[in-house]
Structure formats: C-alpha cells, structure tokens
Image (cartoon, rainbow, N blue to C red; front, side, top):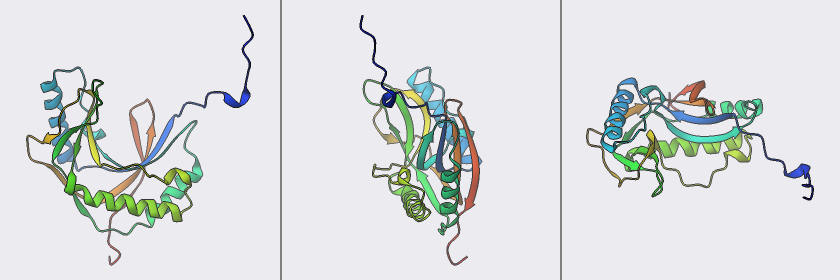
Length: 202
C-alpha cells in the first residue's frame, strides 16, 4: 500500500469554538409568550424536539464570524467601537408568522418571521454594517447574503408551510442591542456589552 503524502498546506482548519454576533432580545413577557408558543408547536408536531427556553430567544442582527481558540480582541474592539457610534431611535419589532427553515425532507429550525413588522431591524443591521466598515472591522462584516429577521423557536422540526401565529403576534419595543459571545457547542450566549437606542437629538 503506498504511503499517504503529507501536505502541510492542506491540513484541516481548527474547529471553531467561539462565535460573535449582534442581537436583540425580547422583553421577559414577550419571551415567555414565544416560548409557550414553541412548546405548543412542538407538541402539535409530535416530535422529540424541545423548544428553546425563553432566555435563549433572540434575533440575530449580524453574525460577525466563528473563531477557534477564543475571540480575537481586535474584532471585539472594532465591533464595540462600531456599536457605540449607532444613533437610532427605539422602534417596534413585530413577528406575526410561523415559518420553517427546514429543507424537505430534512428537519430544521422552526422560526417566527415578521414581514413589514421588522423593517426597524433591517435599518439597525444596515447601520451596523456601515459602522463596522468605518471601524475597520474587516471583511467578515461584509455580508451580501439576504437577511430575514427571525426568532428560532425550536430545532429539528419538520418542514411546514408558513402561517400566521395562532395567537397574538409577538411584538415588543426594541430599546437596545447587544454584542454576544457564543460558546459554540455549549448552548451558552454571553452578552459582552449592550447599547441603548437613542436618536441623534437625545
């Protein structure tokens, strides 16, 4: 059997251990209502998937990258400088539909989406992208992918057609956003800093 050639330049990259992203979180009452909805939908689907706890429910604004061996200090510093420069008034976020991010026949996330109710989230994300560019964050902040604000209720759910939430829409006033350190594979999110939303006149 011939010996396998060792190509140092082609070794597998290290496994990412830490993620960095901007997010917003619902207030406690809204989070509790969404978690209850997740429980109801999981029960109706008759699957083993468990809904996310209220404390884990969030909307990702902008994913800044996954890293191996900890978060790069320069990336965190640039992200914080960018966030501190944001001047935007509080706004309302409303999620009125249940959607599936699964791909038939494979299961996937079950999420809440918002249509016109999430225009403020698009505006905040765009502002962060511009601020990151000025803060010299680097090419990880450049995102050309389409963005659909959503709240993940549960993973491993079967595909289902998008439909209105069977109860009242999930709605809250967004007054702040946060920079989050995700400990990958450990289901932990640590808020590194939070910034209140305020208009430039305040």
